[in-house]
Image 1: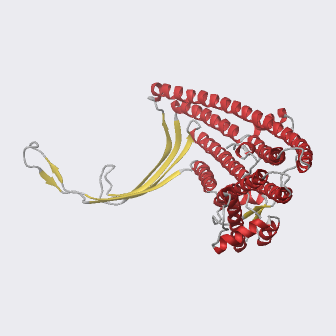
Image 2: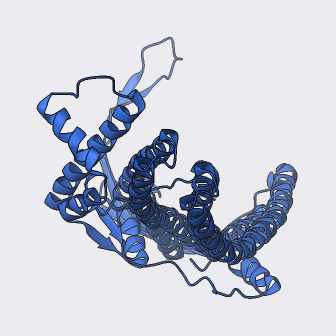
Image 3: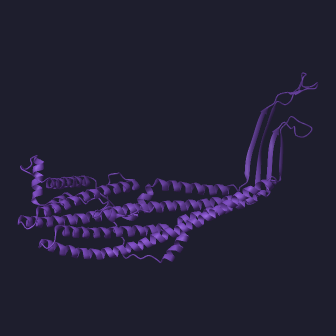
Length: 498
């Protein structure tokens, strides 16, 4: 259930998944930083009047898009205020997702079913007791004295017969079939427990991925918001320089175009946030439109893992998949021993007593009620199993070999997955370190390029590229932190501790 995290590739200076912290005050404050020209166009669009004379189309669409985005931000703020957000830590999310999971409920029912089967197998050791009764109406007895082709002579008999009795059988020796049946059901309980734990860990990992989506979206959206605020201030400076005739109109348009693209990226992030929110709500059994805010921050970037050899030993001993395959192999070995015992005799004690009418079992026969009981030892030997059981034993032996190979294959898969996730986690930690260093360098580079552009010693493209690089490095840091945290929980799942 590994999830691919490619934030840096999906959004080249973009982001992913987090409900925007939208409030009316935020909306108004954000528009204070926009140029007055935006408000002028806003008023003209609302009144239905456009300025006379030629208007640059690109400028018109940029300003119109800014106005529409701001209006949708205000509507979103009002809608979100009507539905208060639900705050979750990751542990609370795990608990709620586990309680709501139908798959996990199925696993729990299967576990209860296997526990009942163990009890049923234990009860089968008790004696078999039965109560039998019979009533019959008999016809007269036809006797063909001259052959079947001649008329018979009918002799009267007792037309009513009945019996009532009880019998008991206690198994003394059954070649260990009952004990192995109990052991087999206990193994099924262990397998069911491991399957339930595996399903729960998969649900927790899925919930963790959605939770980190929300954390990442919040971080990306905040980075874009800060950058848009800063770029609005820079745009005012660029316009002031343009009015003095120092730079060209194209510089202004490029800066406005960059802001417009970032606004579109914010909208894309909001859509991704809505998708992640839908997934979390479905996982936790809440209404689709319920807003959710993650409370728990990222894990520390300096989190340390045990050595790979230590993690490997824990995984080989505690991984749910390995435990399931091991118990399945034990179950097949138990079945092999049970099949081999099919040639053994079955010995047991029996006792019965019954009242019957009429007495026609012993001479002289009497039309009266009588009682008769017996007690003894019963034994049977299935002679046909001596030549029929050979192929059954071979089938069971091959099943043991197959389960053994499957167990070894699962161990290899666990080794590969553990090694891969472990190395990826170390790579993510290195990416975090490099991203922090890159942010310092990109920040200084942006400061230098910005000053040189305002002093007319560099181009607008140089400044825009420097700003994009800084924003991208911040995105890379957030993406690396999310990926490292997800790898950490993947490792916990692999070793069976999630």
